[in-house]
Length: 344
Ligand SMILES: NC(=O)c1ccc[n+]([C@@H]2O[C@H](COP(=O)([O-])OP(=O)(O)OC[C@H]3O[C@@H](n4cnc5c(N)ncnc54)[C@H](OP(=O)(O)O)[C@@H]3O)[C@@H](O)[C@H]2O)c1
Image (cartoon, helix red, strand yellow):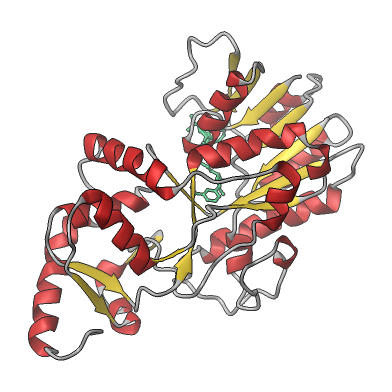
């Protein structure tokens, strides 16, 4: 089977390549050659250098090659999906697109647990601080729209996965390390809002396996699937589990969300700084993926210790840690001001 991945050396796509190679497949990866390539010496992985934003580069790797499967791991805009679709229509066995649960979370008309058919609910009033990424979600929806409009079981068979927050060793967003580093420093922990909203992460190896398992199940053609951990935690529960693993009893201080949003430590140009503060319950149905590919997630207590170990060994600072002192000062001041309140 001839398989191509657009991407191949980043957090998610690298794990998919490793998994495919483990299953005995040869894989071609297409990327700019900017990220380190762990497959340089691997005879099963052929790397083609090019930029997907340059249509001719994509044409060079895709045209006349007859791939059985193409994984598009890095389509972020309508144009990305349109160009690749136009090149591949009628010439491909399967097209697998990496989407996201953000396609749901730009709507406030979705109902938990969110099922796959809710992907096109009415877009909410523009909310720049949407923790799931407003522009990101809108653009990923546009990618999906292009692909669904071109989907055809024979000439352009599309499948999509919609992962939640992907986590594990090497996660470049360092969401978990944000909390790990703060718990480990032993200073008070600032938590925006009540911390009661439920959310789901997903372990990177489970995502990679799901992407590869699609190949064994033709029933997945023409379908989209949520992929998430079966375990559901609120932010408070997550911090409790993490603290247990770190063997530290954290001193947690909640701050009212609106007050928090006014602080410069809460936001950076990429979005909210404090991870997993989802601002609303956001849980996703796994019925479909369990039924069609027998999906099972790895328990938190199995994957998180490896993740902690990797981050503690490899990372100096998490996002916003340069402003950690401001968080601590803020807690001190608020505590002096509101001695009797739990949520300050
Ligand atoms: N992380 C999450 O929590 C999460 C959750 C849901 C969905 N997703 C989805 O996951 C996908 C991204 O996963 P990822 O961040 O782990 O990255 P990834 O899939 O590993 O992709 C990064 C790869 O793409 C290559 N690349 C980047 N820009 C390129 C370009 N213009 N032309 C050619 N190659 C390019 C990079 O190599 P070079 O730099 O060398 O080009 C690298 O190989 C996205 O579709 C995103 O929507 C992520």
